[in-house]
Length: 139
Image (cartoon, rainbow, N blue to C red):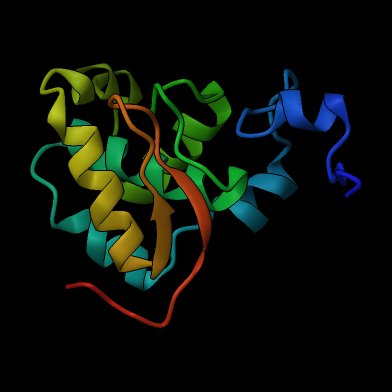
């Protein structure tokens, strides 16, 4: 049986990564906007670093279709745009988001439930991958 290839090698290599060129303002407004429901989820976080880190994971999974292995590996323009939306005056505070290692994984699961995504767990502490939407909310 013939094996079908859906992505080119270049597409496969770039999946789940931001492009080298930072997103322009129009792209930020369209794909990185946090609505009232998003801001409600963000508001549950304590401290600027947690609110900003959580919001970065939220917009990243929506834009890229996956969580990043390093949730802070995003362009500065995205960090600044998210910080402005969640009221964080000093975006550099987000560097402290990963001080507690489990935080990113716990928040990924919460984000998935909050926006009703189904994630495929990869073994060995790997990064979760977005595999589709589900009508089941596991709260």
